Length: 121
Image (tube, rainbow, N blue to C red; front, side, top):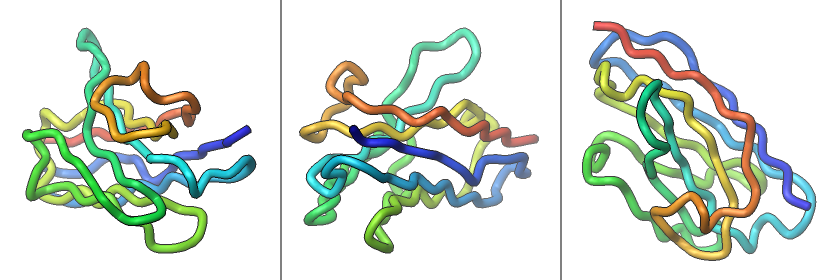
């Protein structure tokens, strides 16, 4: 019942910034935790960050702490602000909705289509 659409990916030089958007609609999306995951070629899907919509509580993967921030700036959009980007951040980034904060993708029920982030050296 929840639909998620990501946007904002692109090509950026190392050290630069991007802001990804996840627009939610349908169902009761404000009840959900929004998680961000990424997957690079040849690697398993990896937890990046998550934020609880109704109170703003957030959790981050160690490798992105201090660089990435998950934000709920309006009624239907979650943002992932990515600063100090590294080539190792290159991946397809997806947002997902689940019932609780979790680092495992199996705990998220609804998924967006993904957006490509490429960081050049």
